[in-house]
Amino acid sequence: MIDQFDKGWDSIEVLLSQLLEECPYAEIESKERRLGMFHVKFKPMTSPAKQFILDCITYMLERKSVWICERCGNKGFIRKQMTPRKILCLPCYAFTLSDIAETLPQEAPMFYTKEDLDELAPAVNTVFGEQGKWLDVPKELIGMVVSSTKYGTLWYGDVPSLEWLAEHCEKLKLYPEFEHDTLTVSRLSDVREILTF
Ligand SMILES: [Zn+2]
Image 1: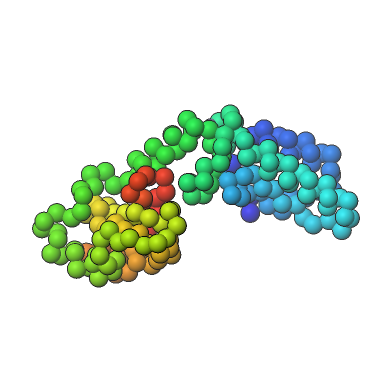
Image 2 (image 1 turned 60 degrees about the horizontal axis):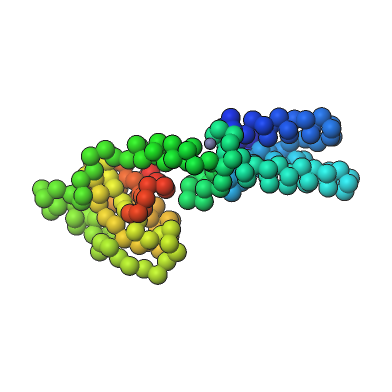
């Protein structure tokens, strides 16, 4: 797999091509963002010494990338709240977050309107259960909000896992009211992670 990176990491790409000139035997197998960092994988070598050199290159580039904003090349930090994780400086992080926020449904009313209630509540309740559930789960699964582009915010509460959320969003979409709807999931406290179903 060859990932495309933003221009902030051009310096890493340049360094990598210079290193390849020094190691003509090296062949790139994949280049990807791994846990937010630049990760290059080479075809395995039969010579342990050559393999060692290539492993060092992979490791050093990865360590170097962890401090470089992928978007602008300034000093960045790993943004663990993002999916997928990225290395970004603060301004680029803020830009990226506002890009994400703009894709949220615009006039999402808090929960459904009175008229929708009779029609929708049974489906939402049947699928997701009661609102505002408290569960003993990791903090990234606390206070998840399910919104619909048609009706706005539908449900919020703690969830056992992201798979559970995905599964239940799919179930809700089996109801005719939600058939052509897009459901998004965000966190009550921020908009850093948005999943779309
Ligand atoms: Zn930046």
